[in-house]
Image (cartoon, rainbow, N blue to C red; front, side, top):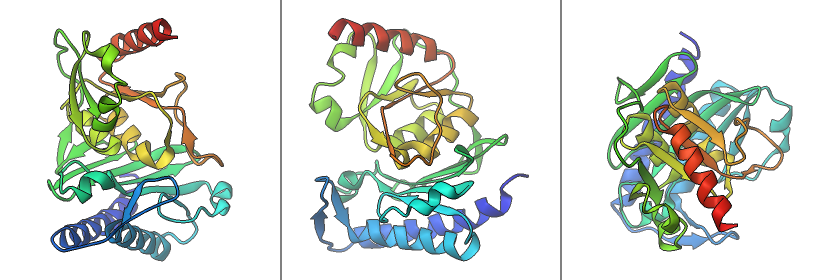
Length: 263
């Protein structure tokens, strides 16, 4: 099986990081604000340390890109790069809302070949390897199911509060959920029909989610419609549209229609 050693090593590290997060969540911890106005806790940093140490010790020739590590551009010369968000959804973690996740992807020549998303509070573990399908808590997962009258979208609470999905309310069933990584993981096991963000995000927000959804039978593209590639000098991406194969074309048409009408 491809990438079996990589999966074994990182899976162990992710579970270790999840245990550390849960332990920190039970006590008092401080929150600081980064330059981009996003929150940072000791849990983010400890998770980052555990995962980086596992990669450095086992795959020293691989590159590393993480939200919580100062970017080392030597990664751009590497064919294999680990792309990590130690906690995607730190705001949810701070509120003890079980809608955050550890997100880890291995990309090879710009394409995801392995992805893990783990919600330690809910104990939900998602994994995928290229050509091997997606698993949720060790069982095969699929995002494809019969489409209802209204496709179900899981959307960011903050985006909903800002009215970014208001124009979609008549044509989509919309439910709030936390981090983008966790939403993509849930999509991969059929909890929704679509997840999309029409505002820019960073590569670490959805590198793992891209392979989870595609290996589960879904379709994913950038907001521009182009396929994803990763490990670029500028990690910011224009957005993401992910959906089950049943709903993808309908969702794309809907987004294009609504966004065209609003321009």
